[in-house]
Image (cartoon, rainbow, N blue to C red; front, side):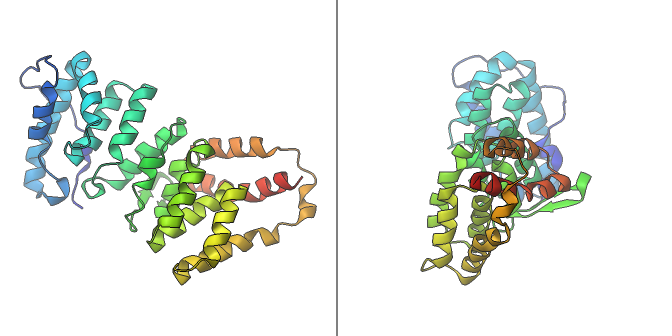
Length: 288
């Protein structure tokens, strides 16, 4: 994957030409500017396309009132070039970070080609909107067909594989957004890496339905032995949590879940360390 950072975060350059305000004017421009897949381009071609993107962004920022409604319209059209669905989403958010626009963006980026993107940019965008309380399920599940999805967070020397990327994209949100969809996706999923990612996510859920899904998967037919063994290991993690440990804590189940959502807004090794303390605390609170 050869996509460069400046393709995703265009810098300001002199704008060329003026946009009209006619309905749908932007569609033709998008087809012209975004008629490429970054992962297929040479460095020289990337340089050339970068200049066009810079002009597009500069023009949009200089005519915010014209471009914002058109970007909203075009990002809802998933037949547009896949790279526009991500880059155009970044552009829209730079012009308007309203909740309605975040929802448009989350739907759009779930239809991007991840090969065209720097995966860290995709991850951080989805995780940021999860931290804002948005329903990120479609965008988060978009990484499941990519078993090698991985990001590096240099500030913490932290590498996140697909499983913890998925966790980070969903745990800051309302659990009602993702528990049942994760259970349903696990039942249908055939990729071993994705199965393990979903199993880990459901382990952190700690609900009767998620526990049941993990248990059923561990004994179900037509599942890979590696995934079933992982599910079985998750099932037995509770064995080391004794009922006598339930004394001495005044925290409620809901307060613990809320505290975990808040903690998972930070992407760091410290937050991951804290994350692993919550399942036991939640189990103890439930047993009271």
